[in-house]
Image 1 (tube, rainbow, N blue to C red):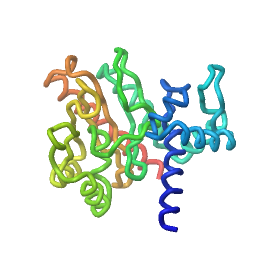
Image 2: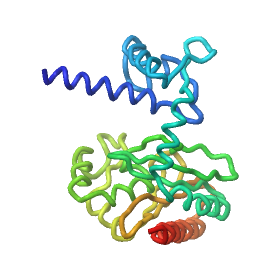
Image 3: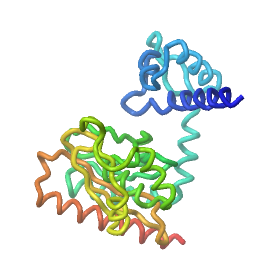
Length: 257
């Protein structure tokens, strides 16, 4: 019976993984691409796709063997926006201003369970490729915006998350991303900001600061851009923009109370 429950939970995760595989750039995917995204056999992937088609969340695209989200997910997106309350609305002009003043991409990121999710993004005027797309879940220990959110978790949950990663330091042979230690995360919690170098995307630097409502961390505001455009002096300037922007959003959130 326990094995059946584990199998059912794993199948549910795979189905949800199919939905999360889609984003603005990957809006139409083949069954093979989806199988790779959820690390499942093609035969199993077709069964999961059938569940999502029957629920009206996925449909077959014109291209043979390809799938896309249906308009039914628009209602889900609207529900998510309503649940965010005033945060996204208040943050948007700050994101746009920081993107314009820094020349780099500005992001608003929230924690959902044990992942970080970008909920809004103001694009850089320069071409730059980032993995942190709106709606895309990312690990809490990778990148400055996610690490700020990790620092705001309750201590017990945060320690359990870090313990599951196997402790501080790089993985075997240095092939795995570095796992931050508890002291490092505590320092981020105290200062309210951090920066990262090439943790999520090669050649990309990022900085992020905590957005607080009534003293409670509710999001992180970040900037990401290529290191070749961001020397030390420019990075310091961007860090200042991010920290001031996060405070500004928090003040406006408190005014809504």
